[in-house]
Length: 341
Image 1 (cartoon, rainbow, N blue to C red):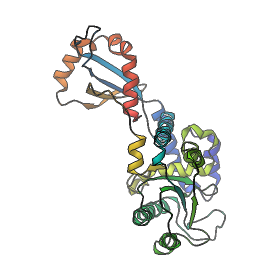
Image 2: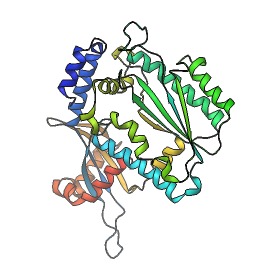
Image 3: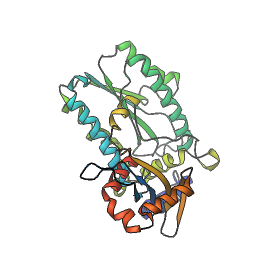
Image 4: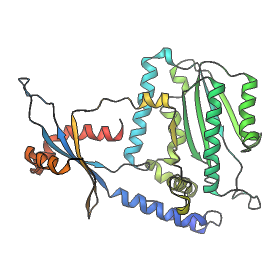
């Protein structure tokens, strides 16, 4: 998956090659999961015929692509969420924020441009940054009087180190005193940066919805280098950054920091808007299986699986064509349900 020339560049880079074994494991993860599917089985019920009479439950089976942060389906999922957010403000213009405030957060770390400079390497710095970022967002809740924001992580283009772009939606302008408190908290209280290299704040006053640079184009401009759809545009530093994201949730014994770091994190209030979907609730889930080219392994079974399976077979589950091809529309809905849009 990862272009061989990028792996070779990392191998030959004295600043990055200590990460090579993790990069190779990340590459294998991408290769392996690219060959996987999730197979689901269950019952669809509550359907009616043309006369309004209830139909028998229908055994259904669907193969859903294995989805994670570095799949095209995840890219589509994120795009759909942003469309949902944009549409919300289009149909609720009174809810549109009066101001947007972009806070860019960077910090001090080791640098390939200054080999003599002492500082943290990528994973220790990610752990430090993740904790400082969390504290900064908690602090901002008390000063900005908003719960609406989009937080996006990006790689520094010449090192692969993480930095953040947090876009807050405001109805009141923060005072100069408040801005000073915010800057001081990041640079001095948390000792993450300096006046020259630490925190940057940019406030805009949108005249109409389109002045916000579109809720689709604006976040995606930062997220592009963490999407698998942009793999052909990755640099060796993007590979390092994405490897760090992948490693983050693992135990420190295995190179991680024990906390899953997300490149895109909306606030709960905006997430509720972005995830609003209509789902098929008239479905009973029987089994989830992990499907590879060589294997089909069950990873979830319903509590009454043995009896449920007999019923599933009785209602057409033993007829492979009946359980799959007749339910293409159901499969599409289940795909949307699992993907969250």
